[in-house]
Image 1 (cartoon, helix red, strand yellow):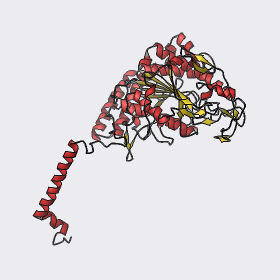
Image 2 (cartoon, rainbow, N blue to C red):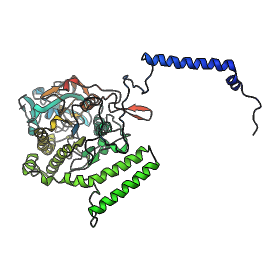
Image 3 (cartoon, one colour):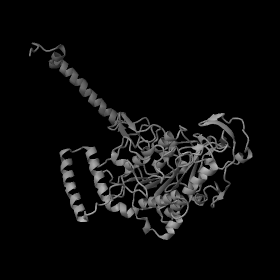
Image 4 (tube, helix red, strand yellow):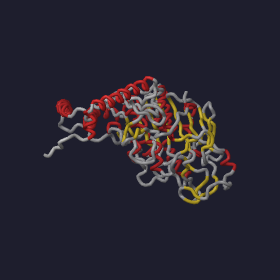
Length: 501
């Protein structure tokens, strides 16, 4: 190889004494300046800051045991959360958002009503299909569609001014459960278990109990891990369909099982020693080890026959339609999971295997009087019993309940005259339990329930508040992905302080 006989001009400068002294002086001066700026608080910290000016907080996760309990950012009001999610868009004006003007203008078409909405031409204003009446000591107006839930209104903190970015179900479900209308983002439950781990070491940290009829429109997106480590995705099962492949094969004794597990632990440990720092491998081993523990814990958890007859009667496992009975069993399962210390339980009331439209969920574009009544028959008694049971056992002291749907429904009928169309501009959800005000209503929709009018609440605000109740700062809980500090609330959201006890 031919080598140059002399150095380049730049190379010669590096060997020149005066240049060396000059460059060294500049360098040392820069180091001194950086130290002075850091001392006075003007320099960047070791951790990057986002637009809010706060440094992201990423939990310190032991990849060999990703489910170990971790501390939040501050003292939490709630240690666990139960999400009761109703796909299909529950009509707020027929359930919890009382609007007397709907009766006053029934059958009319006041100025300002749009000519066309999501599914076509609009009809006239329609009064609620069920009468409203005052409930509880607070006198909160709730319709006769949900009398059992209505009996617990003194425990609830309603948000009547929610609005969302979309009027389509898949995107609406994504937005409510992941903070983004697009797919591929972590669900709320994944963010919480990523941050906090779990108090229970023999069951998943995050369990999604799907509706007896199947999964909602967005499917596993509603409880998926997105770009977070796979260990934090929700585990889906129901009272009727436990996790697969947990039963010991016939002819295989408990001693054989223990010996096999012991051998696998040694082999996995040796393999992990060869690849230290491989988070995916560690998470995979941890998931297999959890599955091994679930072989003994899940069968006991699924044995609902051990519950007293009074509990089955309270939840309604022996009355009504088959779907209602199965949903009631799911509610009992939810309580048992929370008792065991599972961090997040997401309970679905409604599915979407064939387009919904009031048949499998709350999406009532036609015959709302029949379809909403059918869904309420499934949801009302078991859900109310679950809330009452948690309260009776003292579990609401540490458990936050979130009842939610993706958007509301219009105060006027569709052109067919029997259903209500999607309404992204106003809907109602409620919180209950640890850390929230009781018998409280926040925000208002307009006189017809068409748009959020007073103290409007974005879904970002709703999720920020829930994270706050779990002891997490939504502006700091982040995960670095594809060059962006990602978070559940994107770059939005404010904690609604008026909801906090």
